[in-house]
Length: 207
Image (tube, rainbow, N blue to C red; front, side, top):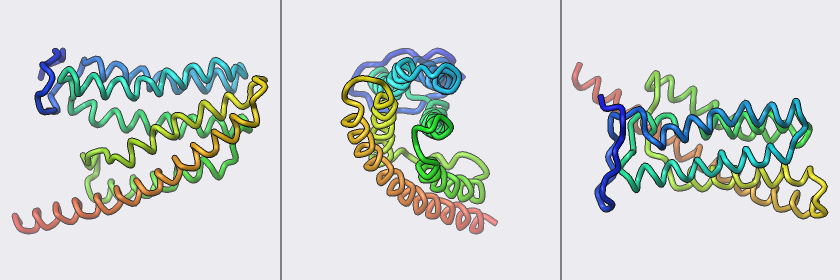
């Protein structure tokens, strides 16, 4: 297994390599580290402004790591697994933090958790691990909207003179993100079912 990913010329088809220490994977680790930092800033320090900066960095790494992976041929099998986990952990942990801080209602967290819980249960029942499904366009847009709406919502807690406007804009974006979240979940639900049935049929045929 290689450990250092070198850049490749643009135009080559994307291949998931057996790489560990790549720039995209390091950026994903940064996103993981941003979660406890955000929770500490908001819950312990009440530093909403600093929390927004952390969210902005986390959202930035989500875009940059994908760009670098595609542009410099650093896509890896590990990154394909870690990246969606980091996204989901960030979205859920941030939502949980905002519920505890009284910024959002617990129903917002439930709207995020319920589809993921169903998909997790279905995935474990079929694959006992990662289903290795490609990320859908709806899923990418959903993540982007939620990562954009959350800092807007946190910003609305600051005395900026535009709190009401930021609050309204945040919920428009988050509302669209939640709709995308459920649509993406439905798409993944059927994709998991199809792949799971295909694997069972394949195993049955070999048996």
